[in-house]
Image (cartoon, rainbow, N blue to C red; front, side):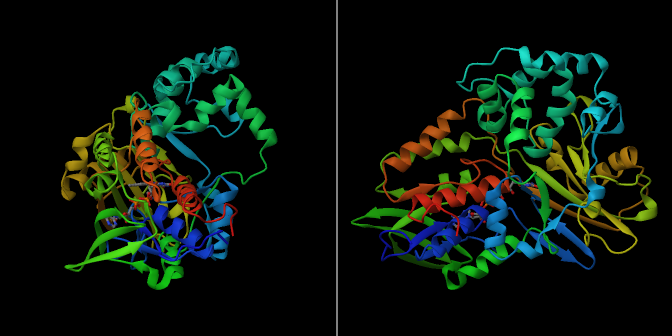
Length: 460
Ligand SMILES: Cc1cc2nc3c(=O)[nH]c(=O)nc-3n(C[C@H](O)[C@H](O)[C@H](O)COP(=O)(O)OP(=O)(O)OC[C@H]3O[C@@H](n4cnc5c(N)ncnc54)[C@H](O)[C@@H]3O)c2cc1C
């Protein structure tokens, strides 16, 4: 239990995974909370919908159990038995090279044999442990870092497509220190990625990075968290302003045309960067500096869910999906083989494929209308996977501001978060523009916020 349970509840702004996780931890610690979510459903970027036999994810498709924290959290919220790990048949991860799908090597022998990298590139890797480490100041892009340590081919055919798949981003723009802190730390601590990875492999006892979802999709997660909050979850409630007044915080919300003001002991902001910049802050010194967060790039992405009859797809779809390196000059960032990844995503005799278009690489393509997108997907999947004919199911989900980019110079935004928080005791800021973009990062962010606001630090 926290040492001093507040008499007033803590307001949590945003009912995405970050805000819901913070609320869950606080409630478990005995602290009253109220979560305000602008939309009528909880989950933010997470949204799973079932249409007949098809199960579509609007945003994220899977969660990585790369830390004990995620595993423990899923168990603690009662979803442990619902966890659905990625199928063994989804082990292959394809990368496009020369217009063909090449599996990413998964073992040292596979690496020696793979056609994804040339003999010269493989040989060059032997020198990696002897290359100097960079300065720790973080002023190096992901592309510079990878090219310096691993060589150009690894940048083009491994890291570039991976960055496209994770951030919908460009490795030339992202800061290695802020976008991939573990990679940066590996070099700083061990002087070499290979040496560091080997050492970590021998010493780490946590889960081995398995990917999972739930039978009804990732939305089971926010639904379970929102349910556990009961009446403390306020949906369709947009927060317009927060005010620091004598001994408490006032939060102005608008719910179905009705304006309300509530009193709270503290405020947790778990909002996307643009929502944070639109919020009116009163009595918070330096809050105007948050306006700078508008400069964090958030490229547009479209997620296109297509269903095909099995016989209309020549490829066995025996993998997680495919990623497209920029040098291949195609119009898609990549595709997930959704019905291979998890069961129950397509009706019998059919397969489901989720394709991502746009990102920093080709923002103009994210503006295409649905008919043009369908054409792009048909042509690209036709060439890459031997897909024929019209999809049996087709649905587009648009993300005009999909994912915050931790670009070079990101340290400036980090300093702003810290300065605004420290000038306003009782105000806590987290979410994917500050604490990392993955769902696992957001779960950690929610816990960090809860602990900062008074919950005890051990997981309950
Ligand atoms: C297309 C796509 C694919 C992705 N794929 C993956 C993946 O496979 N795996 C993975 O780990 N991550 C993935 N991500 C990233 C991950 O989904 C997000 O980073 C994460 O869900 C963000 O959670 P959040 O709670 O911080 O923010 P959000 O989910 O954005 O939640 C913020 C909430 O605040 C609400 N809000 C906004 N303004 C107000 C206001 N004024 N008052 C009240 N509420 C407000 C919003 O409605 C929203 O519900 C993906 C993201 C996208 C867009």
